[in-house]
Amino acid sequence: MNTEMETAIRSIITMNNNFIRPNLILGAILFSLIFTACNQQVLMDENLAVDDEGWDFRNRARFEVLVEDTISLHAFYLNVRQKETYRYNNLYVFLHTTFPNGTLTHDTIECLLAQPDGKWLGKTSGSYISNQILLNESLRFPLAGQYCFEIEQAMREEKLHGIADIGIRIETLK
Image 1 (cartoon, one colour):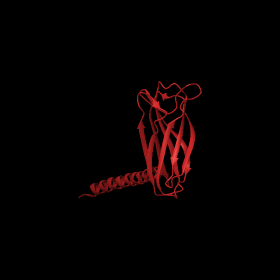
Image 2: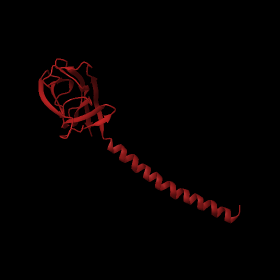
Image 3: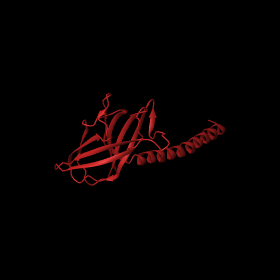
Image 4: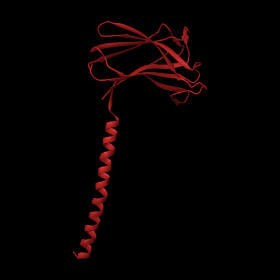
């Protein structure tokens, strides 16, 4: 092979190596950023459909989760998906929690679903709006075992219309 050809091949190899190295480094940096950004695990993410006839105040949405980790912090969310026809800007619910040792707690929670001007909060998809309401950003479960969460609508209506789904999401933070 002549020297001109060898020089051209070497320069192409050098250019490719110089191009590949920065791309590999950039790719590794992006991968590590994505990996560290996903620094939580989902312990639970469950939603239940509400009856089309309306959410009867006697019908509690029930969720159970087995908790083994009593050291890590958790982010605790209430998932609400409502129709655009929902007539209120908020939703009051009672959250009943049964601990593994049988202890019961009851909390009243107001979920804001719209801004003061009436514009819906959350993500809109067709005629539905989904909200994920942070209830606790640093929850530590005190006991290992089975927890039961029951959500009851508390809007002073026997049957509440316009709520499509209700749920709970619990993320383990790292």
